[in-house]
Length: 303
Image 1: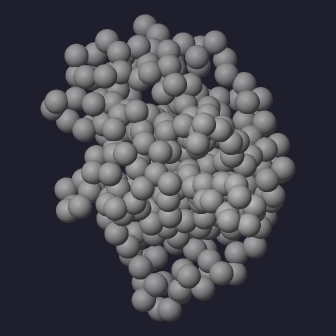
Image 2: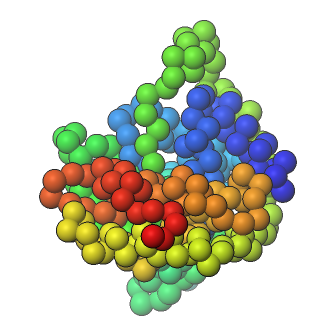
């Protein structure tokens, strides 16, 4: 299994140069059955990462470009009357895929954003009074531009909480950018990617995540972190039970990616910024600053 994971990371690394840590975080998110939010400036490779993950993991993939005039039916689907049969027939929207890329999700209205809430939480959608299950596995990878850019709508807290992780790619390293200057074409590399696994293998790998062992002392550390966010006056809103479980699942996936069958404190610390950064809020700082202080203030071993 470790060889497969290393091959997946290496394949995506040939498309997204110099971003091994972010690739591993994205993979950990999907292995944890979570949804991923990628926030960054335009042109940083957000869409490329989502497409590469779909290719290498062997998932059916659909991309939706979110705009201000988009309607929920553009995502979920719509029933159309067919004259020949005299009946309405439901035409599935792009959400009926194993991996949905919601590109620039914060450029759509809150009404359209909310169309994904049920899909992300329940893995199903309700249209015209009928509940329809989504493919298994099902992931949403959403990209968003910084909120200070024009034409963006802030995602509500209920939507943010459904994303297990939020990551940022950032500018490439000097070496990676020099490779781009010398003619390394990420789009050409993307077209050459072949599936390393299929949906059934992915589900088996997700099952292995749950088998990663967590000791009592490790769970105590996790609980102290969560309680600190709820009790600290710095945090306007602490981690919810869903956020706490997300942190545990993501840490287990991180340990699995690195070939361990048991959790270490370093696994929790590695995924904490991506899992908690978009869930924590304060008046005096952003989530990233709160996470930094959280890791400094909470000891690994109880006093």
